[in-house]
View: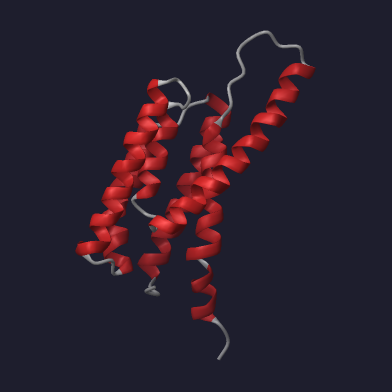
Length: 163
């Protein structure tokens, strides 16, 4: 994995975008299109900075993102997932290697399950009659930050170490 200021700067930018997505989803139950578009449009610059080859590297990233979008759009059509969540996951898929993207989905499901139980309990305790809305962007962002922290950013500290 290349070690350059641009490479890690872009990863930090992705981390900041994920935090913004989580907070806007908590506050408004919406993930803005400009944010997901920015994540997606920055991916080619990241591919270049990371030294990912056009074939098969970029092609695989595009394929995973397209497959994720198709499957998740189906879940959106069934009203099982929000549109902003679908777009955010597809945009993140442009950045994350396929094996790590699978880990992201697993962590997202676990965090989302805990979030659903906690918010469901809070909803019941407050005796609210309205429909429960889960800000799943929080789970997506947490999983994305976990993958970035465990697989991408530790190499920055190793490159800067003493000596």
